[in-house]
Length: 70
Image 1 (cartoon, one colour):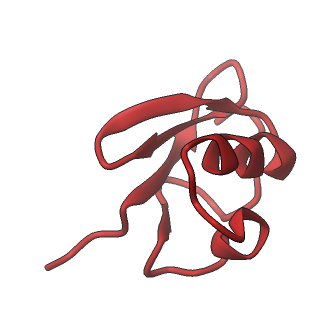
Image 2 (tube, helix red, strand yellow):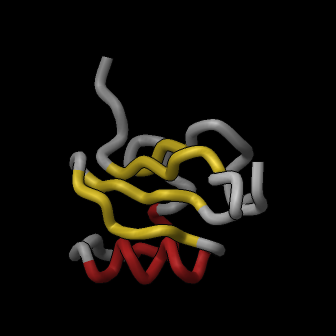
């Protein structure tokens, strides 16, 4: 089973979600703006539309676009 190259991990206890791409940590996103900026810096084109593409981004341990503490 192939997984998406970008993973938005479950919300941390203090809020925010760790973001990884191809196994490398990009940062801790506190909202979609942070996530899009991390993806742009990583060189992903159309980062603002990619975040809803399940072949590119996997949201783990919580609902997509929610960053509140677990």
